[in-house]
Amino acid sequence: MVNTLESLTEPLIRIRLELLYTELLECHPEYNQLSAETDQYFKTLRDALPDQLQHTVFLYEDAQFSLQSILERSIYIQGFKDALQLFSELQNSSI
Image 1 (cartoon, rainbow, N blue to C red):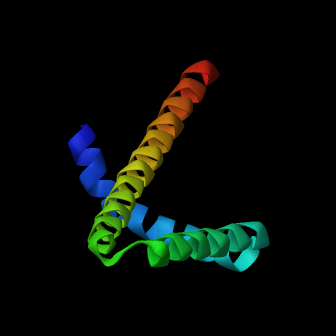
Image 2 (cartoon, rainbow, N blue to C red):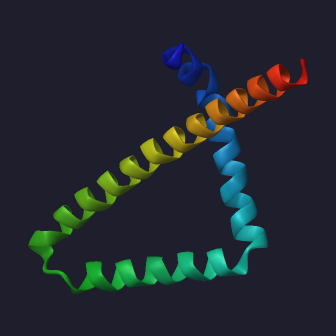
């Protein structure tokens, strides 16, 4: 069931997360400001490193993006499961 649920929801997750990030950028100045600050801090750190560490920074950033993607999917799926469980409990309590 879990693998089926994940494969069925994968396109929904991608679309929903893209919409969420767009909404955050457009409607939440604090998110936008923190995002810009984070980008600037990371750029400053990257620029300060010697050339031989640039590839390591690239690998670190790539790994962080991969971790974030896994975490986002996991959180979304867990929220979906929680909603289904809540719905089931509400159905059972109404009987």
